[in-house]
Length: 277
Ligand code: CAA
Image (cartoon, rainbow, N blue to C red; front, side, top):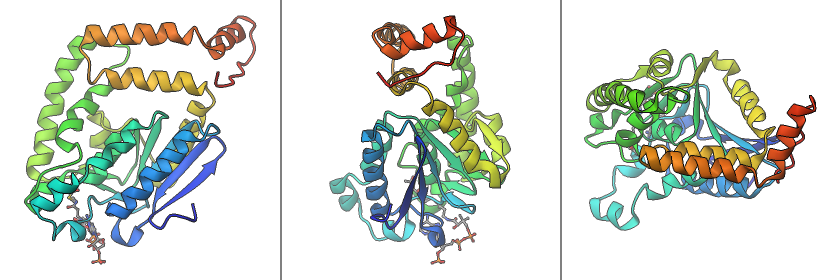
């Protein structure tokens, strides 16, 4: 943690708590911050003691977007050559689950960063938005792409095809309203549109996110990763391809000691002891 200037990393048992730490700039996402975040995520992915991650900001801002001061002098050629923002999506290659705990503003790239995580929890005062239109630009880190996808991510255990269509429609209208007007939505609106999984009092948010991350970390880490992989593939594959992949991953769990332990423990009426193998 000491080696970073723009973030802090703290281990809480099997949970890594990563905090964006440019509070005076409302955690504006400058390039050095993303370098550090990518580095931290790589280390956490490699650390076998960690099972899940919580990503948070300050009470006032999860992140108020890409750093406008840094961007203001960039040209098209600069951005094209450096493929500006391409490295932001590295966080989506982390295989352990990431919970975004959003207090305050999650705007532009900040909202996009939250959407790159697997679960979003919001504090009561959270505000989400894609206000790039006000700056004469558009979302560049997934805001036009991930909104609708995430809105249909709440469809587990229901009729997949039907809900996919329904929520795409709901998702599109809400997403268009947000990206075209730059208006912000509240935590409650984010909850009802499925962007956020739960809303908590602001001062309880991080500890609640850590609690959920602890539950996830208590399971078999390789099985958790397979589960995350399967859900994420739902956004990319056709229904039949997705079901096929899911079934094969399900079969693969039977090659693990933890699957055997989990089912044996149930049959023997005792608590399972997972060993990540
Ligand atoms: N970039 C750089 N600095 C930022 C910033 C950002 N995105 N957001 C806030 N700051 C800075 C402010 O410049 C200010 O710095 P100084 O004290 O040095 O002046 C400090 O953080 C505090 O901000 P405010 O004084 O503005 O705080 P406020 O409470 O009055 O307003 C706010 C809060 C409504 C969030 C306002 O700061 C704001 O509108 N921020 C910009 C939001 C935005 O447009 N985000 C999208 C960025 S573009 C993008 O993200 C592209 C993409 O898709 C990748």
